[in-house]
Length: 210
Image (cartoon, rainbow, N blue to C red):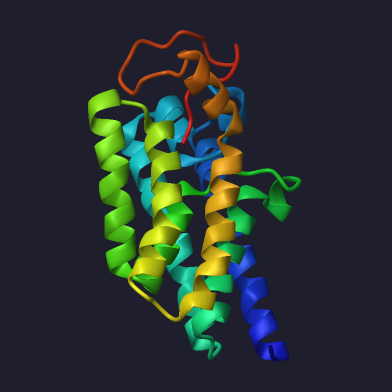
């Protein structure tokens, strides 16, 4: 790895670390950390501010992933190094230096990176996400299923060589790990279903979050 490529990884992290949901919430007069799960990701912004704000935040988080990988390409990276850019974007999103190394859960940013790396793998993961969410309305379950499928699809498509799947597998593990509270609620049958009445008031405790 050259110094220039190392700079590319650093920039990918910093792009991922931009807390878009938090910034947009403040601009709208709301600290999303005090709503629902307290997460700054798009799902909690959707809960706090509605789809008119939440959906653009989701798209912006996807674009962070797109931009991080695009920077890697501009810095001459390919193969496993380009996958490392994807990993660094998600690390930035989940553990933002601007938020005291806290952040979102990395679903949208992961999707953006894989759209750039291998669109077919992103489509397969998104398909499994929908297969899990549509009958259950459990967004967290779909996010976990999508994270599991993503590196498998990437490897099956032989995209960028077998070694390139390792950073993506690490990225998926981070996303799954960030859903540990959701996993506990899923196992207890207590996870909130999308569109169901809220069980808690803002700030009263965690709710379903992707």
